[in-house]
Length: 145
Image (cartoon, rainbow, N blue to C red; front, side, top):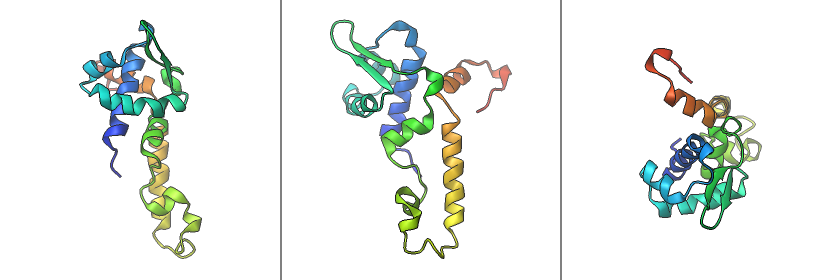
């Protein structure tokens, strides 16, 4: 499994909004500058996040973007599934293993299901708030996700 630029940049954008959530609506150009991401690329990601109720937009002079939910309510898994689609490690799990002609006798299917479960449990167990907190902890705290 490889996470695309779209997924990585969406996560960075939402983390930026989580870190600056007390500043009101944040202009996309400010996020782009802080994150060193093309504003045009972020403009392609915004509609995906807007449709999902993760992001709120406001037009006009004080316009920009805010998180629609608290950072502790948005998981990395949710963000990556929105931007990447399925996080399944093999194609038969991305659609539905039952539809695979080999699912009834596939010796490896339990391995892939187990890996899929671990991936999803791990990514769904990390929120934006967790990442922000970990980033701002001192080295002596030994905080590890």
